[in-house]
Image (cartoon, rainbow, N blue to C red):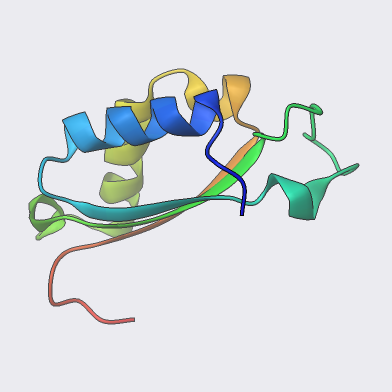
Length: 94
């Protein structure tokens, strides 16, 4: 497993600042998309995020995804082609 690149490190820092106390795993899935649409050759074009944060309680899926995208600013859609988000509150299964 390779070490995180600069885009992943920036994303992790932004997430940690926006969602204090959250448990999250940000996975770089770019190798799975090599040669596909959106692969810019950087090795940091496709990510998946699993995040659990108490602040998500009472928010629907869309509101949670909007909060994550807001925290990441211009990264999704600019430097990151695709970001799959799974956002839950503590105690939620699935």
